[in-house]
Amino acid sequence: MPFVRTRPEPHPWSLGAFAVAAVAGALFGNPLGAQSTATAASLLCERTMDGTRFPDAKARMQAMAAGVAPDAAFARGCLFMGDGQFEKASNEFERAVAADQASAAYHFQLGQAYGARAQHANIFKQAVLARKTKAEFDRAVQLDPDLIDARVGLVTFYLLAPGILGGSADKARREAQEIRVRNPYRGGIAFAQIAGHENDLPAATRELDALTRQFPDSTAPYVALATGYAERKLWTDAWDVADRFARALPDAPVGLYLVGRLAAESGEQLDRGAAALSQYLQTTPRAGDPPLAVAQWRLGAIEERRGKPDAARAEYEAALRLDPKLAGAREALGRLH
Image (tube, rainbow, N blue to C red):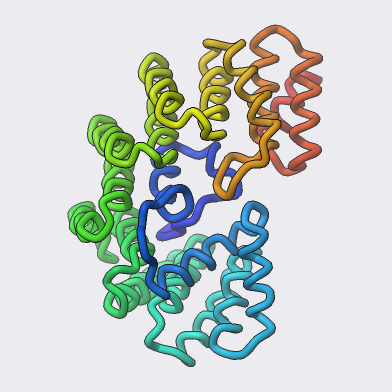
């Protein structure tokens, strides 16, 4: 029962659009202004958990882990989370909280660790860990009402937890409104997450479309909106968003990737998609951008659609050299052999 994890999986660009939307504010183009100490610590921890794409954050935490308590315990907890060792992570975060009970970031990440453990626990332990998760998120919000990550954690908890444990879409909406008051961008993302959870495509579309217009320099709403249309095979709408994205942010590399992804999935505008991905592969992805391995895989899919199996095989093999664990490329390569 996945109660909380607010950070993306290793390749978020292959997830559903509204899963992307749920985490986009934390990691991709978040118009925040000044950050509180808790927000900065939380963001550093989240990035440490995805150390492949955020190596600098991971290196900082590794240095902190050799320091003194409670920062060292907190750093170790973040590193254990990134390695998938959730029980060890919760033990370290518990030490950090015990040493500094006034830290909202420590409480929030302890809640994250409990939630991650709940995903792998039996039904009886899940209930205990779920209550612990919510208690830590609540405490984080009490200590720092502006710690948006903790409020996002509560939104996700309310959506995924059963009613007997406090789950409620209405509670999620109330929390999302609290987020919107403090940060309109993250609030819009939260409401899009709720709409996606409820399979309310019109509402999710309204939220994301509004974000593209209110925050035209932020890439994530464009990506989530276009991908949401694509997942429902509304290709004309998806291409319209991609075109608007290209006009608004012509220098954004992720816009190139989006064009390539749409071409690979739809079978439309294949030449444009191949050119866009080839150009993207010449860039160095920034923090949060799609990995080059995923772009190489998408290019292989375009070549396969073009009826060029040898070219497709070469792209899939190149993708696997970059990321041997990329399941999509491995499965595609298996089809060609």
